[in-house]
Length: 209
Image (cartoon, rainbow, N blue to C red; front, side, top):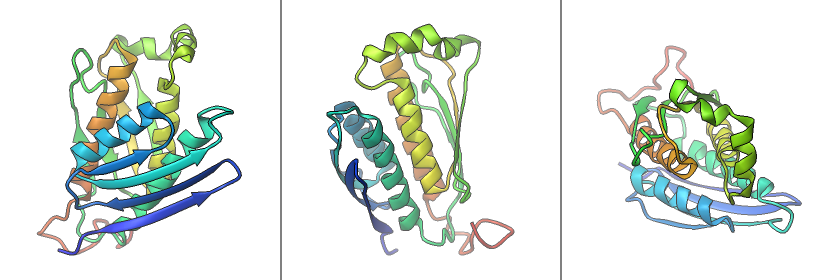
């Protein structure tokens, strides 16, 4: 099978980003965003999803991380969307949980590569602390917060054309919750983008995604 790959570039007054993606890869990555924790998350995402990703970003980090974080998500989503092409034969749906210490995936990630991009986060009784404004305020001292991760994932999902649901099941450490989310997403997206040998058609009754 011919490897599915694509390049996306995004240049604004605030950032300049280049992304090369191979969906059918081996998990190799070279990531340089200027935001070290985000680099680590995308490296983990590539490793566990068996995606090959080369990504470089130059942004206005002297102002803050917001523009770079958002635009990296946009560019990475656009590259994945291009690499998927017409989406013929893909499995489309997936659901995955990957535990990390006390965080049960921090999340359960459920996706639909539907062509309709959106991101939805859900908490439960054990993870309501994620909704607490006081907790969010204390995280402002972190270099990469749950709010940053949420914004990145929203940008990535929308521009990939993926419906993304993240259910926070358990977790007490924000770092673990974020990292487990990226790992769960990697495994789910790997499965959803694989070709089902039983089908050569677009997985939709509409004939198009």
